[in-house]
Image (cartoon, rainbow, N blue to C red; front, side):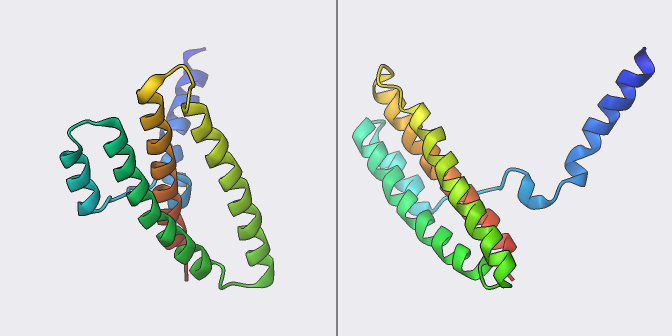
Length: 132
């Protein structure tokens, strides 16, 4: 009984090495402007959200540029990327909307905005790696 469990666990531990880099969480480096803005916010919710919004705009521009670069492929690959991107946008929006709990107060607003920023930056980084 223990031997099959160990075999499964060993296989699961090796899984990350078998997955393509794009399937794993992307490492994101946020801008210095973002770091300075958050520090200057003093923990004030609206100021923090403004910082996240500005950084999200920077990453959204990178996302769009990376999508265009990655989309310079065969028509079949373009169609596949378009379908994946549309599904990703729906998922990101639904996932981050969940964080915006109407009963969660200012923490929920920060969590939802942070979700949008993080997911957009990770997807942009992923698409940058896919571009030829």
